Length: 72
Image (cartoon, rainbow, N blue to C red; front, side):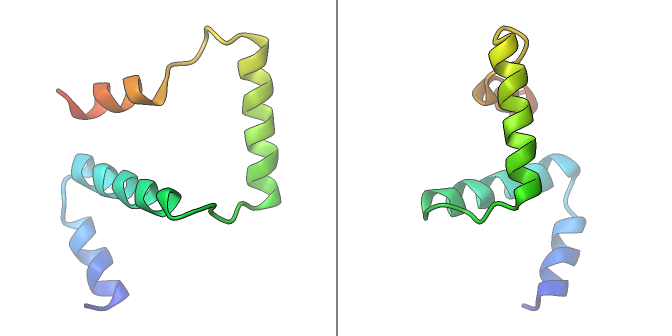
């Protein structure tokens, strides 16, 4: 299957399944080791970390967000 065929197949899935697939792929890649991160992404992570440190009660844990998205 070509890259284009894979993408077309993914596009035919409902959005919820597309998101679940993307999450699974990213989780698998993360398990294999560090992913390359651009300087822009590093800056964004830093910005978000600073916001979190300023008020840690504002956010929600990823497990909670994922549960709300997929366990309906």
